[in-house]
Image (cartoon, rainbow, N blue to C red; front, top):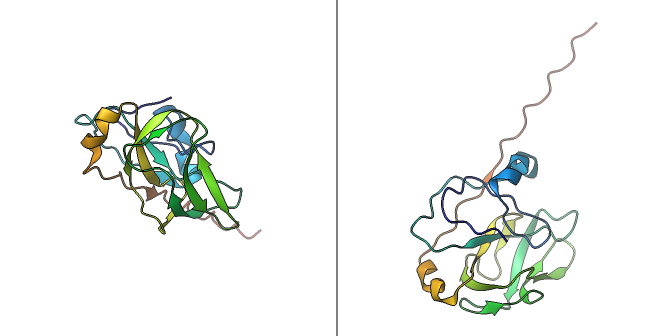
Length: 154
């Protein structure tokens, strides 16, 4: 499991679990359309920013219908963290690893694009208080590719 401490420059939302991966995988970000700007987390305990996962092949955004966990709750692998409304159905978002929910970043009823930060996880319940005023880094849409020039007339 990847925990971020300092020097987070980019993060990649993974489809399986919606976790944000390492800089190594961030090279794929422009193709996915999301970039998390550089920000230092040196004053915060080790944590993981969880992004909205793609729960269907056609999903571009989702709405947090219900949070099943609250800040401070322990999460075990297989626990349902929240319910997400997709373009086709309401789907349970299941935890892939053990963690403690430190902060909910998106309130119920809010529609957000895939990869947007929705929550912060920590390993130790004692670290939850450090995230009381935490604000997620903004997700910026990748610039659109320039249109291909028209072929020259023969």
